[in-house]
Image (tube, rainbow, N blue to C red; front, side, top):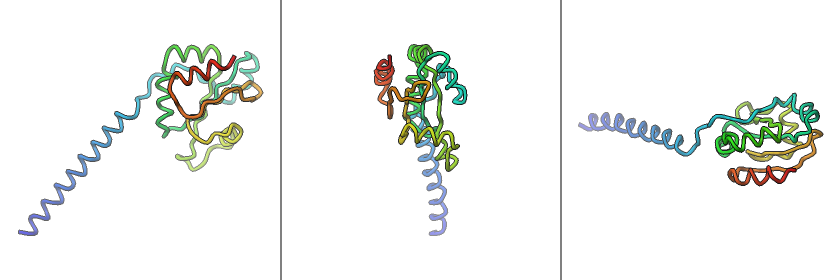
Length: 156
């Protein structure tokens, strides 16, 4: 009889573990915003210097990482917001700089150099720079669309 009881315990335990894992997966989707449509016109890093010099626009460097939940909030609430995206596209050349250290163990040299130059220690970090690379403003972390708007408006 003891053998039958232990054989029943294993399947029940597996079912409980499976239910807990499924519940955790579902809960993760509730707390991580879905990525909305990105309305910002991103410029490749290799082209932005010449483009900014020719147009006299400030460069917006978006230092981000795929695993970064606040970065996903920024994507959804700022870069996916039609009014803010329109303002970004009018006033700036936006460049997405994606950190790959966690996924690949290290970043490409040009990404590492940019992160060091602009003292990027957390994600997201937004750095607004002139065509020559001079920093004009920055936002570390994500405090919502109003904070982004305030930082953006500080650049004239």
